[in-house]
Length: 271
Image (cartoon, rainbow, N blue to C red; front, side, top):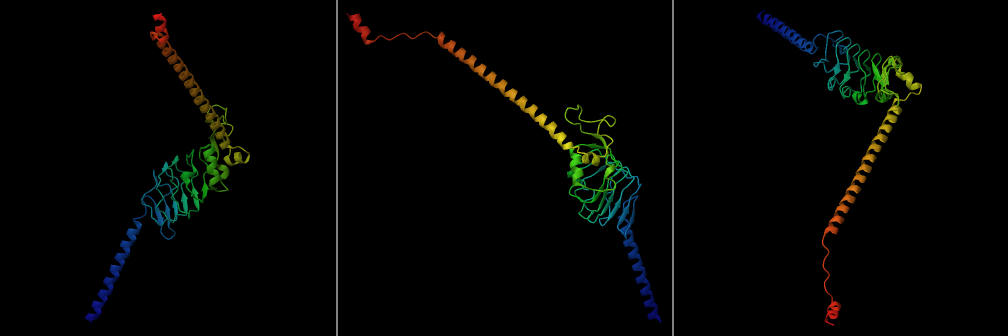
C-alpha cells in the first residue's frame, strides 16, 4: 500500500515537472515575438499590422517565413534589418512612410523570398544596389516616383508584379536636354502622372536623355580645359619673349671688350 502511494506521488510529481517545463518553454517561445506583434508559430507568420511601429523590430524570430509590417510609421529600412531571417518568403511593407532604402537594405534577403511589397510608401528614388539580386515578385505602385535613368534600370532588373506594374506612376521626371530645369513639376512635366512602364513601351528612354546631358557636359569641360591650356601656352610664350628681350638688353648694356693687338699690328708699328 505504501509502495503504491509512493509510486503515485512519484508519477504525479513527474507530471507536474513536465507541465512546468512545457510552460517554461512556451513562455520562452512567446518571448521571441516582438512587442505589439502576434506570432503564429505553426505557420511561422509574424503579424505587426497597424502596431504603431516607427522602425523594423530587431527581435524578430529567425524562423519567420511571412512578415507583415503594413500600416505603420516606418520611414527607412536599415541595412541589416532582415539579415537574420534566413527562411523569409513574404515581406509586406505597404502603407508605411518609407522614404529611403539604405544601400544594401534588401541585399540580405534570401533567394527563398517570393513576394516583396513596398507599395503605398513615399519612395522617390531607388537603385539596383539597394535591392541586391532579389528575384521576388515586387510591388512598387503608389509611390511618388521620380522617373529617371536609375529608376528605369531598376524596373528592368526587378521581377515586378504584372497586376500592379501600371501603378508605378511618375510624380516627377528627368527633363530632356535643353528643357531647362532638371526636375519637372507634376503639373507641368510631360511625363508626370504617366505610368512608367507605358512611357518605356512608348519609346521614352530616360537613360538616353542622361547620356545627352552627360555628353554636353563633357564637351563643355573639354572646351574649358582646352581654353585654359591655350591661355597658359600664350602666357608662357609671352613670358619667355619678355625674358629674352631683357636678357638681350642686358647684353647690349655691357661694355665692349678691347681688341688685343695682333702680330701684324706690332710689325707695322715698328716700321
